[in-house]
Length: 550
Ligand SMILES: [Zn+2]
Image 1 (cartoon, helix red, strand yellow):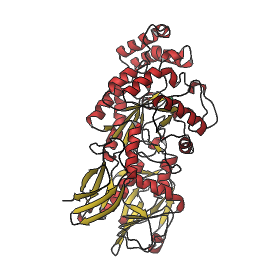
Image 2 (cartoon, helix red, strand yellow; image 1 turned 90 degrees about the vertical axis):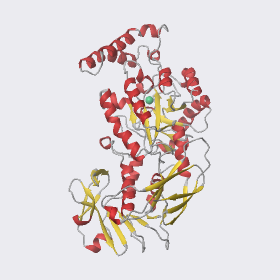
Image 3 (cartoon, helix red, strand yellow; image 1 turned 120 degrees about the vertical axis):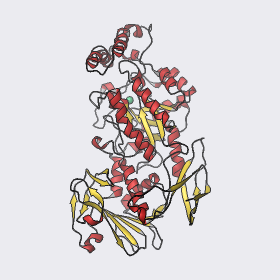
Image 4 (cartoon, protein in one colour; image 1 turned 180 degrees about the vertical axis):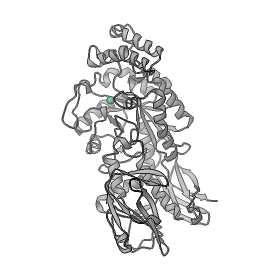
């Protein structure tokens, strides 16, 4: 059991942190005994915990009593733990104590955390504010240049390693569904379901330029094959026939998506209102953000999706800043789908710190806007579903990979092969940390002139081979709600047998089970070269689970 001493303002962040690192913990109570006492920027109370973790970027009594020299450095810098780099966004306190270094500050090679033994207690002093870092990740999110680092998972990993490397036992419920390594949510923002909705508008002229001229330039740069140039020219020249209804609308790629994902689950975010550009965070209106269609215009597509068991959610216009408008956007889609709990992702990823609360007031069950337009990766530093500190019910499904970020010349501007290489570390991180990898491939991206279908097919093949659980966004959210409802009531160890009592809310969908991991307490000899040693069990309901460590 971990006892936590924190300041009142940190409480909601502490609670959420331990929904992601799901291990027994509580706020410190006088007289209670803990294996680990974690103090965040607070004076450690009298205690006999075997491991005392002192987090904080301010000078504390620990270094004052020992006369350890310290100095402060500004944030947005890296520390490393066993060679793994982790950014710290707030200030960091460094210690003039190389002998007991636990974390290395990259810029100065000084110690950003030190450890010391005093009697039977080990003390680790870490020179940053853990829960301030976590709050920053949840609310502001990482700047794009650090997008590739799953920082929040690294904070959890560091804490887990500190506990295990000091020979303490640990149990946790993994962010991984039973029978799988991770979850994949395939999603599609439906921005341009038909090219015929764009007769003589800016989008059409942009398309013609990119199809006729851009394709040739890209062919000369080796980015397009001759076949692709021919496909784009043919599409451009067929435009009058498409407008006349005499040729297939090549931006309607729904059937191809349904075919590619026939054995998989996926979620389509559909715009409820036509012709409304909404307002950005500076109060400006960008005319080209307005949708040329409303959900009602593609009713046949939506019927097809529903009969294929795909999920339909809201691609919102103003829901992020106005809960009344959000309620209206939600109702328009709910009238079509009949779903009780419905999610949202904002068009152009419009968002701010108040948006989660506004979306919750508008009646949404989850949001999937927290990601980047310009790059791929972890805005909130995690692949886990999480709850923003200021809301009660709304969960956030972070968005990790968007096709437009990979391929737009003004963003990452990658070739198909480079895009595959850029996505690979995210897939490998999902295999290592679990969670859910959320991908957004836009509706028209398979058609001319984008022709991003080959990259998508390669991605699906790679993912399929790793046998994740392909879930709709709502299913992934439900699975994480089930995990959040799980409580480890007690852990009783007798030698190598461990009995864990768990309570969990009843499973309403037929979802994969939860995974309990019981770590073996490492002997101190393993500290230098730790070997992972644990046993696992899966469960679906409240149970007493016996695990044998051998
Ligand atoms: Zn959009």
